Amino acid sequence: MSFWKNRNARAWIWGVLAGITFLVIGAVQGQFSVIWQKAVMICLECIGIG
Image (cartoon, rainbow, N blue to C red; front, top):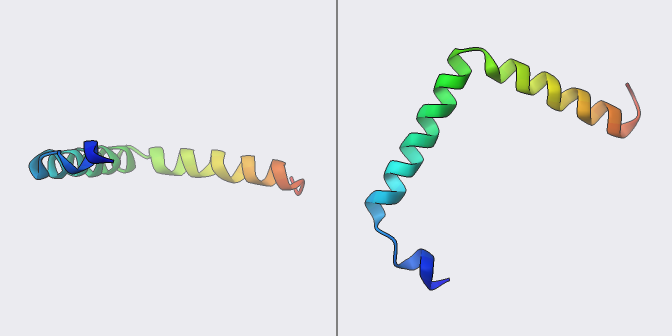
């Protein structure tokens, strides 16, 4: 675990900001609803309802 302790705090912040940015871009493009529909269908198929 010493690998994670030796990392620069600014690198973590940039990584989190990049992740949030890409999530927002995907949501603006309407990809959130597509992924949500696929996730719901997978869950319904696994449970056996759909």
